[in-house]
Image (cartoon, rainbow, N blue to C red; front, side, top):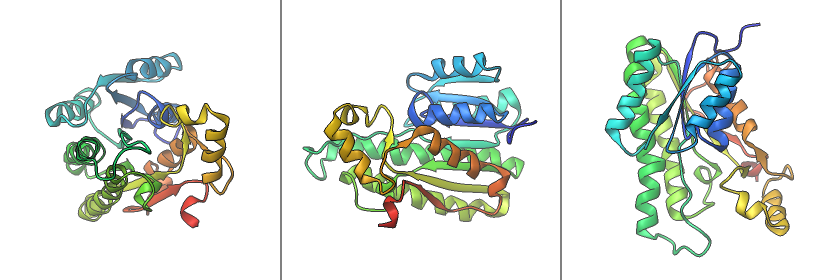
Length: 249
């Protein structure tokens, strides 16, 4: 049976670990040709996909570098002729509990990656998708983009991702392009691992989600796959909470 993305291409940033890795593997499992882009770890994920019989290549990418982003997206089209799906997932959390609110160094760096990085990636992706009159983009926001949870920089940048998503969705709807966002809750990744390694810390993380546990990276990947697929053909401009009920409080 053919997968949901047989004959299609997908570009995944932050694909070297966590949610990005899970999504790159999911795209490949559904038949897509996948580009895994990250500052580190992309080669290892590409090797996993190759071992499973998928078609893939890895790119070392800093999403704050406009020329590098343009070159990476252009490389997809040069190699495979088109870009069908993009998952703009690269992001950071630089603020800790003790970080002063509004720390400008943390704010500037976080916004450069989480917000401006998404703009740069979308601009490059939309240039190709508009030319072919089709495509689907999913951006990674957060429950922090739907609430005041998190530090100033993280919260602000993730709210901005939703605004960018809605703006692009409206601008490019007539071009046959859909743009949505996922808003993960607390997910078991390297980002939460230091806290989750402590039993008390894990209990706190689990209790944050009404469903009673942290989410798994594959559960976010499943949401991205759905939003990029034809099964979501009438959905655009939507921030989808995948959060175990957190936003329902």
